[in-house]
Image (cartoon, rainbow, N blue to C red):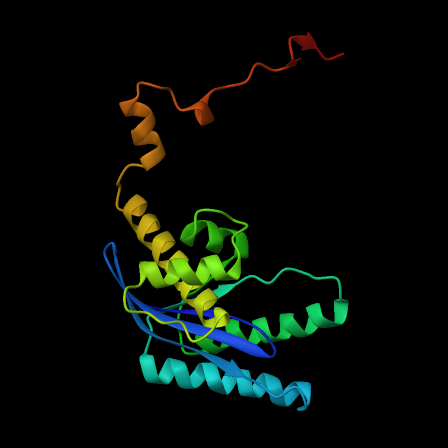
Length: 196
């Protein structure tokens, strides 16, 4: 399965293409779509759309994944970033690709092992997980990380859908421990005291 990861931004939109074959991941390509800050907002959004469309046409991915952007202190910047994200979502959807969405913390946790990793740590781990990969920028590395996160999530989801046992449940069974998520709580008790 070929996946495009997109890290939306109004100034720089990172993109990365990977191939997922079972547990193996292969780097295909990565780059950044740049817009001119001197251009009007509608023109910049068109540049992002056209750039993503060109990448989709060149590499023919099967699925797409886009990072969920979080609000920042400047409402105007947040709104503009949301518009760029909208373009990143709709462009692959218009050509019929399924589009996954992931929070930055989930992407970082999936690739680095911690949800508070720095951009440099993400870049380093992406290049380790994809041998031979040289990300053109941290934005492109983030996009590759989004694609890797999506590959892991899709693979796990398909295994569970096929009836493969949840690895947490399997590990608990092997250790002889009951799944605590299934344990019933006694109503009306908290810290040994009854609520009135």
